Length: 327
Image (cartoon, rainbow, N blue to C red; front, side, top):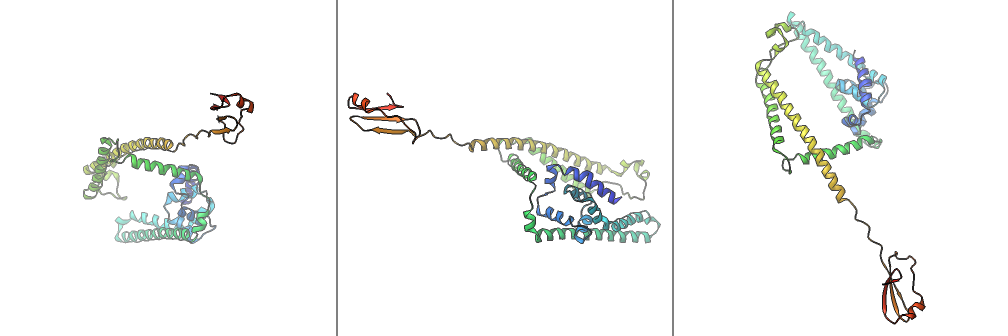
């Protein structure tokens, strides 16, 4: 059952959702740690580092990540097989919970088996973190030289610009921030904090274990689990998240408008000035008289000059002409 779940999560969820840029960006596919993880998991067969990641990593996220990284399914199933003893121990611990009422021996066995399962799972998780860190440090140059996911790089740049616009646009000291979003997020924070505090100091739920029946609860239904203070906590929690959702929608809309305004301002400031007009060429023709000609053609281009006969025909003075047409 475990290996079947691994296969379905990797192929039907991870490999399919890995085609989305936002998903690949979410797992930080260009980071050294993720590249180190991919390098370890690509090793064939069973080895300590590979099994530590597949066994010690979170169940569902690990299998989905292997699909996003487009890793070989059979190799992932082979590296996951060491988890079978842990599953057997955890299953035994759960079975012992049903036998606790039959004697103290079963209660003691349940505690021991549960502790050993927890210890083995924790050790696998710590080993996975150790091998990923060691690989990312030992092969840092090779991992950094791997070609990045260009689509994810562009997506991350856009997200960074959007996050900056959201920080700047929702800053309470910035101009144009209305009062109601401030009141909304403050009320949300107070309600969520109150829910967390009451859930600790008050008895919100009826004691219940897997060996009991729902019919034993007050009212004989599952709602009997919740005491009156529990409903208060649930109400505060739901209300706080609703207010937070409203604030988040306003913040996103505010960030988008802020980003559009910043883009327009940047395009105006970056606009290049129009090119200067071509320089005028000044021609001075020596003769019995001095005629000055101003040409609109660029410097170095051929221009027309008056004939000597025309110069002798006019009285001795200085005249200015444009495009060889007397003004």
